[in-house]
Image (cartoon, rainbow, N blue to C red; front, side):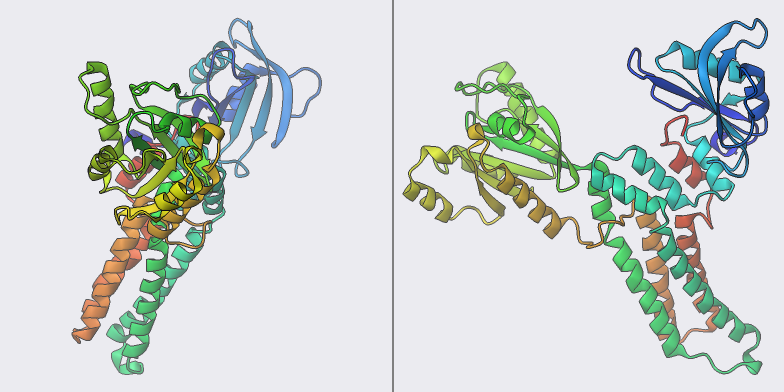
Length: 466
């Protein structure tokens, strides 16, 4: 068995970020049969404080041999089964920083605990029935959430919003399997199987799985965010657009073309979706070696982006240079940003809007980035593209991840094969083969059916201490 699956013994880890002179509180978490004994050896509580579950005790952490003072701290006691892992858990709430928590952790390890593997506290919670696998994955999503919407979706998963429909679909499959197997074993004693009813039930289950699969793209957007590249000729206002959008001076803005020599990044949230905005160097032919490197990086950034903001200068209109850049990025979803619209007359602005731009441009937005105008319209255009092309689910509280999508896909394929088997009028034994495959695949999602390799893959991505 792998190390992460070997969940015997008492484990300890620092459960908070260790940042020099930054954290005000640092927590050392201990879980297992020796947790209370370790706490009683290290923690000295003055007065007549009661050592009982779900109480916080004030006192001092001392070295068990020398009695040297290590820290003034609080001790939180959570005895089984009313704890995160359903084991005895104690937490030492120390002063933040580096030294205090590291010294306390070392004393816990010397007292009989071992260092926890990544995600091992949550793994124990799963193995002890405290959480199912979808809830465990939601915890990781909550810790890594990059927007309020992502956090809300993770909380919904933690409350079982995904697990409940998956369990119901699996139970329906089990009911169908029981009906079929009963006919195999007791054919002479039971009424004939209603083939049409079985086909209808399986089709309904497959349809529900299809609905769940439609949330995958939404889930990826919430977890990893949208990568947006601002591209265009030099001096069309790309850096001004980034600064206006991010409400900062991330990029240097001058009247000189070619000021931006490298890709400048900014992290934003648009409509609950994390957005990584890349301000790129102006794309043009140049003999300047440094600028040439920046231009090449701009091209790579545009190729890797989920969405490209092709920015042009309204006073110049659509130029040959813009056409050349467009031809390089036309394979990506595109928004045309017509910037510096304040520099043209009304009739010119109207003619710009009526121009026949390439048909692969999804949206057209007018901005005056230097005056922070048009940003709301830009965000609206981005969300419209996202909703139209990447996010198909209306329920924003539910979003599956790649592992769950793979298992759902296997279940759907198995059910489709069952329907094909029925259509071909094959014996009932053949029906059960793929039906069992669907049941197993659905069980993989919540953890009713799970392998060591799956657990390794899931929990190795957690941080130590969680």
